[in-house]
Every structure is written in structure tokens, then in C-alpha cells.
Amino acid sequence: MRLGILTGGGDCPGLNAVIRAAAVHTVRTYQNQMLGFEDGWLGLLKSRVRELDLPAVKGILPRGGTILGTSRVDPFREEGGVQAVRDAFGLHELDGLLVCGGDGTLAAAARLHAEGLPIVGIPKTIDNDVPGTDCTFGFDTALEHVVRAVDALHTTAESHDRVIVLEVMGRSTGWLAVSAGIAGGADVVVAPEHPTSVHDVCTYIRHRLARGRYFSIVVVAEGATFVPDPDGKALEVQHRVDPFGRPRYGGVGELLAREIESRLRIETRTVTLGYVQRGGTPTPFDRLLGTRMGIAAVDLAVAKRFGRMVSLQGGCITSVELAVVGQGPRPVTPELYEAAKVFFG
Image (tube, rainbow, N blue to C red; front, side):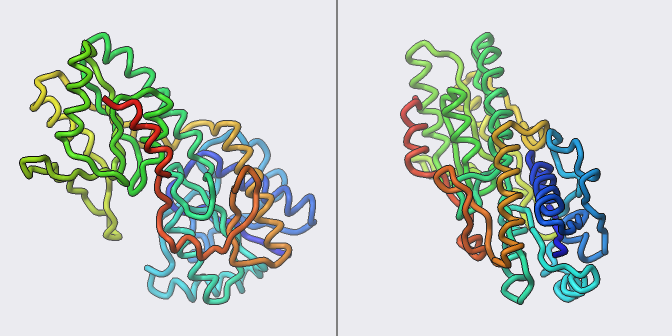
């Protein structure tokens, strides 16, 4: 067989582990050929391709990002994009394509498979919100970065009796915010799945002030929204849009910090981690999960079980229908959010 692989959407730690595992398994186990398409779907649209033999993937396991590059291009948004993808399959004599991405990239992959193209999906995102899998690689490394930030902010917040608002990634789900809030010992967490009011956030901080705790750590997801206060006033968060019309998140932490300082008359600072969360060396967990998923994706392709997405369920690697990504982002479980609320206030 002649297989291809691409990485689309946002980068995350563990992608190179997938590329390495898929290439080595294809070449060494099945004596087949693996091609790497550069910059996501652009690699197919523009014929940006390279062969992934054993020397090509040597030494990439501990590297963050992706050696193939990535982009947010969607073939269904490009004029003639779908036909260009079909033509690329014929031009490069592909028997199957492994598509590694988050909800947007995998949604396009599912639509292409529905039109007859042989595709296997591999879920990745630091947001951990792809449905059909217990966990995505990239999340553990990002979580480690956020927890280290929370740990570091505790000492400076306590030293100066400040409130520090930490804004983390999470467009429509709060896996990073809630998990880091629990693991790092934050005092308040604001997640997209459970909108709260600024009034409630300030109430939690007042409870700490009443107990002599003059500092607080607030972790807020970039996609968080707020419900009105008892007086009807609500914090409105407006996001810019990118060239594709999609929201560019960021800024909610600064808005919330201003409200806290204004209402409580306590010095409040903001820290936005931004792309720090995406970068760096992947943790052993993400390297292992990426490796396992890369191997499983190749096995699915060789068995011609296309239209599947590799999945982690109960600690075991299995697969589900690729169309499961159409269910929308996987929210934080109620159990995890309830665990976080135990420590509020």
C-alpha cells in the first residue's frame, strides 16, 4: 500500500510521535510506503509532499509541533478544493490517508470519506474536546504547562496580596481550565460549559477575604461567557474574527480582572499563557498516546477499515466511526466540574 499522512489545525505536542510511529510501522512492519503532506490540507491542494522513510523520522519523537507543518485550510472552503483532493489521491497513487487533527480538520475528513475517499482519523488537540475518545494527545503537555503557571502564580499572588486571573486556552470547553484549577489549587474556575456571573466570582473571592486569605487565583478559559449579575449587568466578551470568519479568542482574562479590581478594590493582575500552552517537549504520556494512535491508524488503513477514528477508551486503543466528530465538542464531565467546585470560595 501507499499511505499518506497530514497534520491540520492547531499544532500540539505529540504530533511528531504520531508521524514517527505511523511511518516506522508502515515501512518496517508492512514494507509499505508513507508520504507526508505538508501544511495540512494545503499539502494535497498544492502537492507539497515528501517521503517519510526511516531516516526522515529519526530523532523527532521528543520534538514539539509537527515536522510536516500545519494550516487551518479547509478543502470545502476552497474553490475546487474537494476535486483537488481527489486529484491528489490519484496523482500520488494513495491507497489511504491518515488525517491528524482536531474537530475542524476531522470534520472535513469525515465529509471527504462520505464522498468516497479512504481516510482514517487521528484525534489531537490540547483542548481535549474531540468526541469519541477519552483523551487526545497534546492535552497532558498543555495541562502541565498550565499547572506549573498556577503553581508559580500562587507564590507571587500571596506575597503581594493580589488576585491573579490566568487566561488559558479552551474555545468551547474548559478541560484545561477545570483540570488545571483542580491540580493547581486555583480558587475560582470559569469554564465555557458553565457560565457564571462576575458577581459570583467576586463572592468566592470575598469568602476568602473574610477568612483572611488576601490573595486568589482565578483560572478562566478563553471561550468563557458570563450570565447577568443579580442587577442585570453582564460582562460582554467580544472576539475578533479571522479571515475565515471564525472567532479569535483572547482577552476575557483582562476584562474579568478589571471587573474584580473595580468591585473589590483589590489589586488584580492578568496572565495570558497563549501559545506557551501549545509548545515544548511532549510529556511521556503524550508521546506514548501519540505512538499508540499512529500505529493503530496504520493498522486500520492496512485492514481497509476507512471512515474510522482511532480512540482511547478505558485505557485501550480502539476505533469509532469518524462521523462521531459531527456531535460537536466534548464538554467537561459533570463529575470533574463538581470536583472543582468543592474547593471554591
